[in-house]
Image 1 (spheres, rainbow, N blue to C red):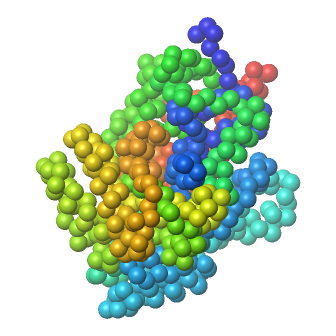
Image 2 (cartoon, one colour; image 1 turned 90 degrees about the horizontal axis):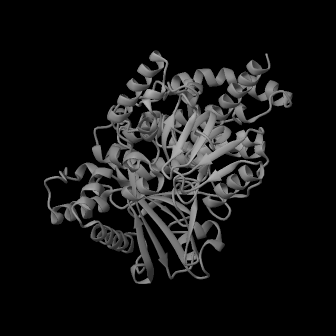
Length: 536
């Protein structure tokens, strides 16, 4: 143990949850070490440069949810946000979402595509409108965790207290909508294609509240000027300015709970009073030395949690194609917009045959993939449409993503045709866009490259390449009730907290920030208790 560096708190994992914890801890004067296994911080939030283009490597925009902007304001981090209107397109028909009234336009779009289901569509969009009402309450004010209630009495009396009563009613209603969205909508229509078109860009078995509430989140999106990497860069600079230490290329390989120490894969040792694990949960329960836990009851609980975590699967992953195109951004503004969800066919994914990748040969998998790409829904982002500095003059960068099964990508890689799979996918998706949405674009494409679920697993360390959390197909091995979110930071391991553990519906960046702040607050509380005990 001699020579080990001591810190008040070590934070493992520099995704947005870990960055948030480290920011609040360093701002409070704690000695903080933030360890990141990768070459850069931010996880699935951030940007990268490619030949003069700026691409977002993870999320395409940021939803505030009464959390993000109040957090930045509380920390004193200045950032400019740009508008990020969402466009929904099905085949050749589209609607731009600009306000709550846009729900009527979306309803009309669905009615044009499914004229035999007008009554069903009205019922479904009425449900969406109802959930939008819940969302307006739940995220309609700045989260009180990011306000100084002692200083801001007017906010407490005029805003927060009246809101709390409405919050209790609406969170109760919202949490009743736990059924998987596909099953829920089947109670309103027997047209499976209609159900598919509404739901197929969500994860499998996504709870209804999460899915139906997304219409409100679309209206809440904004985009950091300079790309999502601006958000991460400012967080990183803040931590360092406040005296926090950030170590990249530093993977924690073992945790000794009794000694309060961690060991890196490179053999370095660090000591802590509190540890916040904001990295992959499976890695925590692999790293923990069970024999270092002397308390028998705690040891039993840790062992049980470790077994539970090992049995669970990560949530869905994505396949992303990046394109550089020799076309001016103005040509994409009306057709693609800044941010679009595009479904090239109204047939629905249920038309797709099941595939067993273990028994199918390469040609069968390619044929299935081609059909999948023709039916799936794409999230398409044009960074330069929002901010012209993110691409060279007269050119545009595009980001096209769709859900993809990690297991399929893994089998393809194990069978030795991973690069061929990427080339096939890039070419097929490029041809599809040329055929359906932007004729002539294919001849203007300069470069294409892509990211798969395997890429996400390699870069972030997320088990199964998951992008937001544990699969909804099984019970989640963490606190997943939003009303109980304060409990989400606890682990059975002594002096070890957790943050950003893929635990929630809704999940995503705002909740990662929220759990990061809660973990920091709890660590600071425990440090204060320890100091009080020492003084007494």
